[in-house]
Length: 178
Image (cartoon, rainbow, N blue to C red; front, side):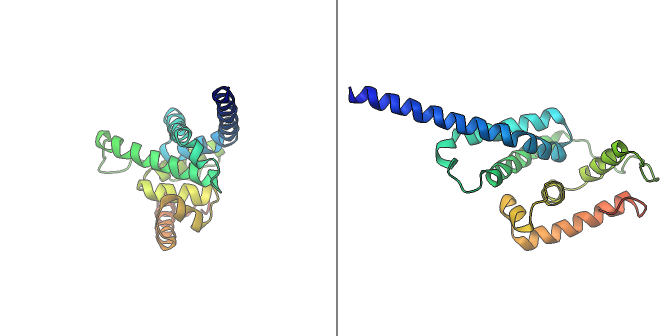
């Protein structure tokens, strides 16, 4: 009889954990998918990276569900998945001696602006991309980005400044100020 009560209590606890995880996924999936897209510029790969993030979190949900900041934890897991994906993909990429010709004039359309920004972002090293995306698209503090990427605050500040300088050089003086 005690085993039956214990089993029923365990099933209720698992059901409650699954409901918490489902609610977490529903609220954070769009943000994580957008961040993943900004890092890889492929909606399908972004969805895969987001699912990988949730799978890793689900495997440890009983331990991490009471973590103070699940959003920050999910960003960290996502960035690790992006870095892992980039390591696997880097051997298959084609390196060009020169960048393809870009449009020297200032894009007027928001779609053209979006494409130009993503193309410029793609030229940065993966860690610099992560810093720019987290700092400027996700509007995270320097300290939060440092924690997410497991680097010091000074590294985030220095790489962010260098990355923005490179982006400004690529986009030109007439482009919208980043």
